[in-house]
Amino acid sequence: MPSTVAPPKKASSPAHPIGRFAPSPTGELHLGSLTTALASYCHIKSLGGTWLLRIEDTDTARCDRQFSEQILLDLEALALFWDGDVIYQSERTDIYNDYLADPLQPLTYACSCSRKQLNAYWDAQKQQANIQASGLSQALDNRQRYPRCCLNAGLDKTAHKLRLQMPDTLIGFADGIQDNCWQNPQQTVGDMVVRREDGIINYILAASIDDGLQGVTHIMRGLDILPMTSAQISVMHAARLPAVSHWYHLPLICHDNGQKLSKQNLAQPIDTRDPSRLLQYALQLLQQPAVDIDTPERMLAQAVQQWCQTPLIGQQVLNVAI
Image (cartoon, rainbow, N blue to C red; front, top):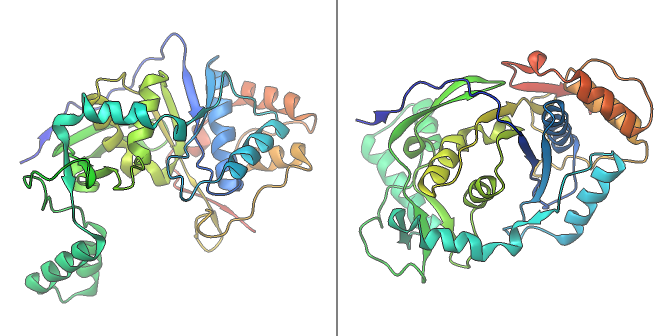
């Protein structure tokens, strides 16, 4: 029976709020990632806080430095200027490995299971359960998590991928847009692969460590990351890092047909040749009060002064006709 943490409470604002925008350079910024950047910037600046930029490029096979450079150029064209130096996660692998060696080491174990083996395992489980209804079968597919085959195998951690044990505990957190949330990280994500056989670090592990080391207090990001929040809370707690005090998960920007705007769905890169019009449109999507067409700097100053997340509360999708 999983244990339960205390009900979530609304955290009080710290003396100096710190937010961040953390894109992955597997492509250029699209409208969905732009609205996330804009919302996180306006929100944290409305609190008088610091806005950090972190390039989450741990997956060197999929990320490209060219995209990293274009992201910086696009943000500058829109006057979304970050505070301090840009952090590149690809340059911080030693830091993540140090945390895996200590203090996360007691929760890690090596895993030799291939995707093919796991698929065969779940196929056998479905047949054994004799699930006939396609709806139930699909529900089982969606709930698949690692069955801990290698938990006590004692495999060499340097020769295989590394998993991190997630607690079988209900975790509650207050979300400033999606209200109070409860998640059990063992049930939702299971024991995550935190380092692949080729040494590439999982992005949730890297993000958790960096958020803690950078002292991030306010995280505003897309709703698609919401299911990973309790896992991030668990990693930060196990790593003895400062907790994030404020969470906000923005509605997803979707086509009229409900399809999420994403790089996987070939969302078109933003065009910054008319940055003022682009900012105006993105603010409209975020249901913010109208701003006067002006220079990007002046428009952002007005947007920061007027920032209000109330229109977004409870929403999961913002439709856009493209």
